[in-house]
Length: 446
Image (cartoon, rainbow, N blue to C red):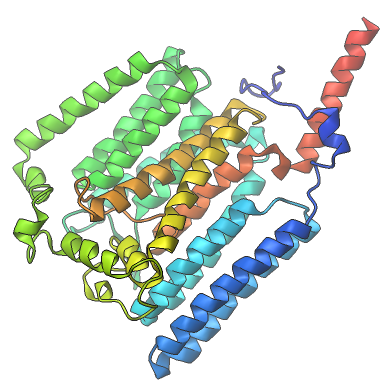
């Protein structure tokens, strides 16, 4: 195990001779080309179904925007797989999930499709830029404090300037464009946490990140954005555990968090009122339980293969393409596809955990697993919430819910998972291999 001279983040992995001989540093593109073709055909079928069932005046616009999205995917594939010889499993997952979001947006809200496609394309660009940025540990160390400052400034600006929308202050408006800063801060939260906590046992490192985390969660509570606050808290626990492995410490943190929730419920009764319909949705079927009861009813009516794009009834309920999007997928696309989407989130977490032991530094291992854990936790809040298994928090389903800020956040988090795989950076892998050979030669000479 070696250490970088410019930072105390530890090296964890070096490629073996066998990996060099087997060509794992430079990926072959054949299998990824096949999977990309299959994914594109699936997306094309969804888009064509959406075009056929849409109003005549919307068909050309939907066709052009969906076609543009397919072109962007293939440009990315050509640049990074065929030329860059990079693995593509994570990108293909992102492309497919984003295509479901684009299809639902085109079907339910054609007027908002341009913005959804635009933010998805920007998200892919952000993903590519972050992959480049995360290659250098030096850049990561230098930028951790500026990123933390910008994140806190965004939340503070939202707290001061935002107006209440659906019970929470989490939107900023610039002309006709709305932005949800808390979604963007999720990426910063993972980045700062992984870069700051060199050793959780180090008191200075602990307090730096605890203060940052408390500031973020505290401002989210003041905005009454409790779903996002819960996501941040869960992510903090993941990062803390990855650095310490100390279950007792996590129990103490959870106990403190629980006391905080009890305090808020006692002294802020309007907060408790928001959860009053939990497990009582059928008693409030036309009031507080309207969204969840309709989601359950229409989801089951879709069966295994769905009633078809554009033929569902849940689409007429408020926030169908955002908070209730999982129900729309169940009803119109079928329970099988909905289950496949759930398995996709699980795959991301399993993939991240498996890659963590091969990550070249603690930063990549922590950031990748934390990002995957955040995506899975948020997906669980959405899926379980709309089905009344837990209180509904109003958080989005990553990649699938309509919303530009959410889409940018999803692609940003996916970049952390991608960056933890050393095969993403063939040049770095070769450099580490040569370092290993030099160490072996030095040892032999001694």
